[in-house]
Amino acid sequence: MPEARLDEVLKGVLEDCVNKVGVNLNTASPSLLSYVSGLNSAIVKNIVKYREDNGKFTSRKQLLSVPKLGAKAFEQCAGFLRIDDGDQVLDKTAVHPESYEPTMKLLKLFGYDEKDVANGTISDINERIKAFGEQKTAESVGLGVYTMRDIVSELLKPGRDVRESLPQPMLRSDVMDINDLKPGMKITGTVRNVIDFGAFVDIGVHQDGLVHISELSDNYVRHPSDVVKVGQVVTVTVIGVDVKKNRISLSMRKAPQQK
Image 1: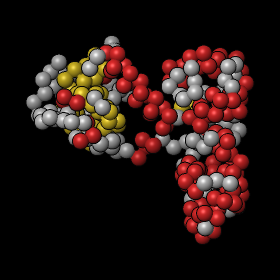
Image 2: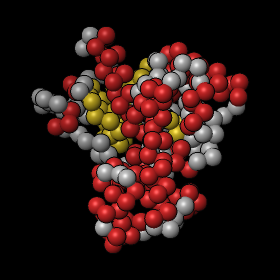
Image 3: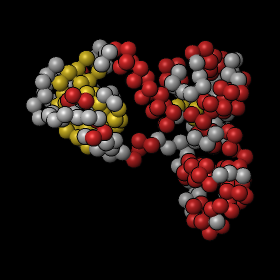
């Protein structure tokens, strides 16, 4: 694959991951923030400077005080930027500020408040919605049914990472970081992402390894998703380690060629 194309695909994968999981507004690096929808390099620099000058963000609304971050950019990025210990519990969820008012109406309708969300004491909210009527509930708080379902999912586990439910890799006791890896090692890991040119596998060394599409099987592979899926536990062989570039090459072939 041409290097430019590879770089383009990798950036697309990173952007997709960031916008699914979200990033911590107070700790995210400039490079990570650059993948958030609505943010360009100038705005990212201003966010970091605002953090340095004013301390950590305590509310998403403060983003509107960041130079060059206008209403349009705020609309695009706010839902992806999380504040774990801010003034508003909804700031740690994927609920967009535009939906805060109807979300609070939803909570109030069933006798909840922000503390209940923070303390995780709204586990029966779906039952209450069902008893009241889903369509009736949505109309009462000014939300669409599908939007309300997404919001409830966020309220039930604020700040959740969708990867938490995936199986944890079964680690080797003699492999703690990338420096311990040697070509030929067989390791059990968990598939964390499947992309057009291969799959990234968590092998427990703080850096996912890449199984290129050509190394997924001894047979022809049309697309990586035909062979592996996210969350699948696989056995891989280390075929290359570049400590300087922090890259790990893996293979799932029976007799991989070392690189």
